[in-house]
Length: 71
Image (cartoon, rainbow, N blue to C red; front, side, top):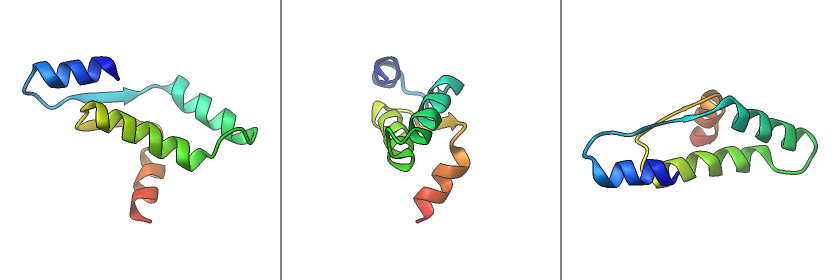
């Protein structure tokens, strides 16, 4: 997130971020064990990336995010 923020600050270009498979797996596993709320974690993860300055987010949670944002 720091790198996204710094690139966004220094350059006048749209910044894209990729939410990697390890982050996806971590959220899914923690939610399956009941340690976290999956919806909340997915929304917060995307919000953090957006707050850092990404205009485009590439994520395995894309379909879920689209559904959550429509609710």
